[in-house]
Image (cartoon, rainbow, N blue to C red; front, top):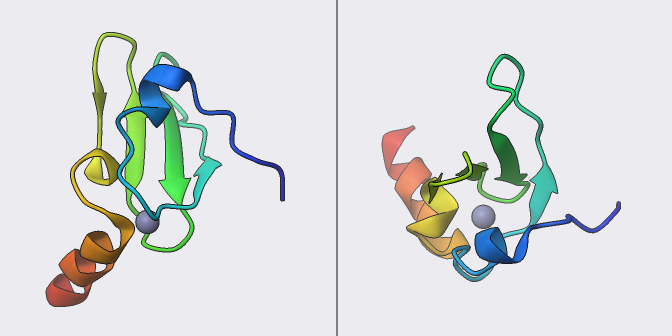
Length: 70
Ligand SMILES: [Zn+2]
């Protein structure tokens, strides 16, 4: 598995514990996305805005977040 090439601005927003891999979007060509292989949450980089579950929760918190919803 190759290491994800997160831009520094994106890496700075990511909470601890996530294992992110490049997850290209289709149809949203201006948005880059990386998804955690452990919890399934993503971070999206639209240029001016970096957002997504992995910027808001640690990997452990994300696993609990999704477990409660399944
Ligand atoms: Zn995660």
